[in-house]
Image (cartoon, rainbow, N blue to C red):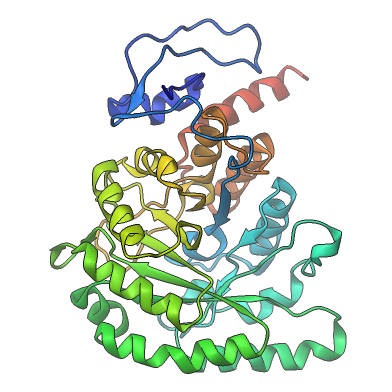
Length: 379
């Protein structure tokens, strides 16, 4: 049977409080590097020991804080230099796919207005020959956004050897009411406008990621039918997207609902390798849902440093799942992420202090307090 071997005390705050773990928890830890041990337990009926295998134990974390995490903050605008430092820190943590901005109307998303200034300031994209390739996805909602990006790339060619970015992202809602609120267009109209954008991006050497929003619930219409999500995801893949991120915009998903959707997608022949989970933690169900999908093949997770972000068109649905919490939990159930957790925690607390917001990561707050204590003791 598959069961949890060890799950740290710091995850008990964010996971066991959900009623997932059994009651028997040892509280003795022999050093600051050890964590309490748990007796065999299950996650919503799925045993977790041996969840990963030697050949299938890597989860790619897609970091969205610099775009999705910052885009909805109230004025003043986050300084471009802070964004640059954030992305440099994320790279140093080991993250290799980092959303960096959007080519959208500045009057609609003022925090992203400096994306054209930020991109040329970022560390050059690392060639695959020198290690794991780096990707800087930027949101490009329409042809106007893509043309703005291409014009910026053309103007920068004379001064650099590498492109400013190598990836764009496109968004589609799975539901009509949210599509009208977010895009002022029906789902079909948004989909019909994407092929020219995707084709031109692919022709310029970009890879294209598709996002589907409201995969669990529409804030204006209630639960989303899985077949609606399957339909949009399939069309995005057929258009040329290399993978599709499934966004629980309102944060109302739970392990059972996610499993139902996941199985519907797989039953329609969509490869699990092309699916990512983008969970919002509005109702504290993001991490349990992610863990529930691991036995079903989930290996790509979107998350945001310090749990920053949400959606301006979904009332009350703030809070992406925190990268610190995701990485901690994945490591404790036997998965690798390539991410340095200590560095990540330090970066999350730095960011929150720099921009004056609360750190929504339980792991970030807990380990950050320990880091501060060790620093105070001169350790």
